Every structure is written in structure tokens, then in C-alpha cells.
Image 1 (cartoon, rainbow, N blue to C red):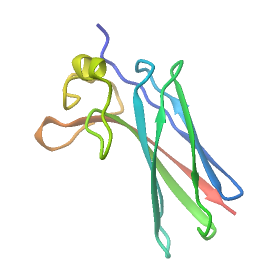
Image 2 (cartoon, rainbow, N blue to C red):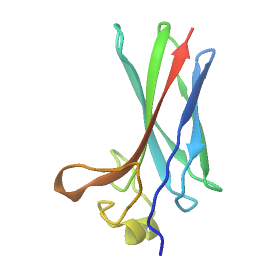
Image 3 (cartoon, helix red, strand yellow):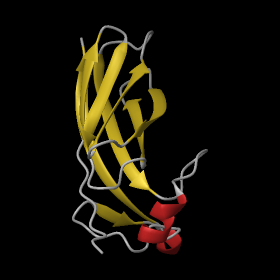
Amino acid sequence: MDRRVDLSVQARVEGDALHVRGRATVPDGALIVFAARRVQAPVRRAMGYARVAGHGYAAALDIAGWPPGDIVVDAHFQMMLPDRSQPAALQALYGASGERMTGPGVVEGGGGFRAAIASTVAGRP
């Protein structure tokens, strides 16, 4: 069974919303966790989740009150999530720590933890 994970992310700002979308070669129902951060002062951070359907995902974050500037967006497919769980079938496929994931965007952290990561930048006018 193929355990390769390819992940992409795109982001755009419309008014007070940061729209995040992308493609993921993982089964429907998988969760993609994404983080947005403004690296210039004043620093801002936000996090969200999107569920994969038909190899795509989309979500929006409220960025009201964020000043103009670049927003870095990182999308991750990983088995270990901050406050949610991936479906059991995905844990069986990729391993409890993602140790069976492969692909060019898959990185390894400490203790055998693996994640597929993609990044982009969106400008807030």
C-alpha cells in the first residue's frame, strides 16, 4: 500500500479572513493542521484544522486586528495533533507517529515523529 504523502498549501487574504487550501494525497477524513504567523512586530499566531475530501482541503481563519504584512502559513499532515486525533484507519496506515510516511515533504522530528509539511506566504494589505 502506498504511504507516500504529497501536500501543498495556498493562502490568500480577503478582508479579515485568511483562506487556506491545498491538496493532500491522504484518505478522505484526514485532518490537516495549519498555522499562520506574522513574523514582523507585532507578532501574531493562529492555528486551524481542515478535513480532507477528494484529496483537497480548505478552511479560513479570522485575522481581524492583524496589521498589514506577510503571513507565513505552514500546513502539516501528521498523526500526532495538538488537541485532536486522526482516524484510526490512518494510524494503522501511516503508524502512530507517522513513521511509515514517505515523500519529499516528509520531515522527521525527535523520537521517530514524522510529518508532511508545506509552506507559503500571503500578504495582508
